[in-house]
Image (cartoon, rainbow, N blue to C red; front, side, top):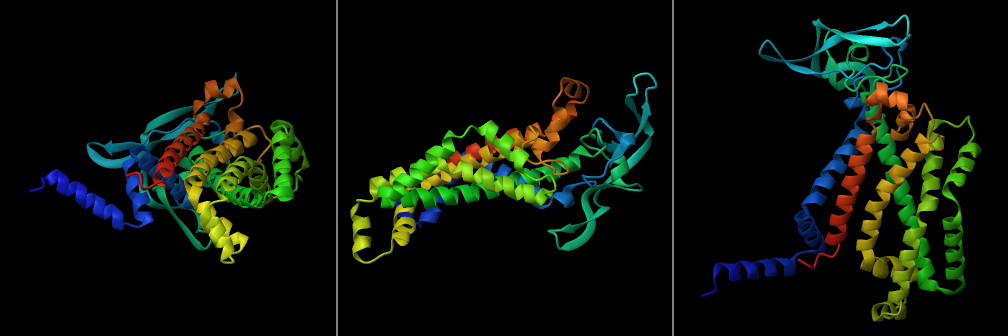
Length: 374
């Protein structure tokens, strides 16, 4: 009689033999615990990006000089033994000698914090007008009393600005990588499949793009962008430029793999039955190295995010009033700002977390794309 271990092994083999490719990929991906955690974190950040206005407590562009550089407030969850979330009122006074504002907490004035409270008006998904926010205050406006992460030099709520910056930085990376991957697969596939003069032209184009110095290029582009352009126009231009520059590495990899397999029997058979080159490339050849494309995508996303953040930090990317992680970090460029108001460096944390999450997710997806090694 076979033992339980033998029966279990045979059942697993039978289950694998009849499973679809999608099931095999999912089963292998679930074994990668760090990839699962990374995927959850990435989904959380995109959830924040989609529901930015709902999660914000105040208008990210609303400024008030009387609350400039206010430190983060502490939320107290209990009052006299009962659960009652609240913050203490903060009063600011300007030092007559140094002209700096100093803030003191008034423990006698408690401001209740409530879920699904009313606040500034916005349009959910750009369509549904509403004023309901996840967190708000009772009896007063959240814009005047609730500053979870403090305020910046213009008195704007850093928590709300960080929420909106997440949407900008995450989606500019997603849009940029989608366009970059499309260019890399299409041009790399055409170059490797056809060869000859087509291959020579595309490879010389790649060499030209890779030989351009990055910093001088961005300085020139920043100067060339018209100052009257809206935030949306600059956003789109930055996305397209990042994509045009970022596809070259994947294009070369795809070309190399195409040249390796274009002489295989299945390619010859597809050509003999009259399949068009477009179908041969994208239906038969590209899926063979989908694992590398997936890994390249997940690794390119954090690089796009870092590129946008770095360029905006240097003033070569998005410009105020656009809100991104890079534009928020512009106010923390000097030692004095970091020493006196360290909360201005808070946008660094989501950048680090997102990059690590994407790297873990990319490792798991790369392994899962070869699902037969179970």
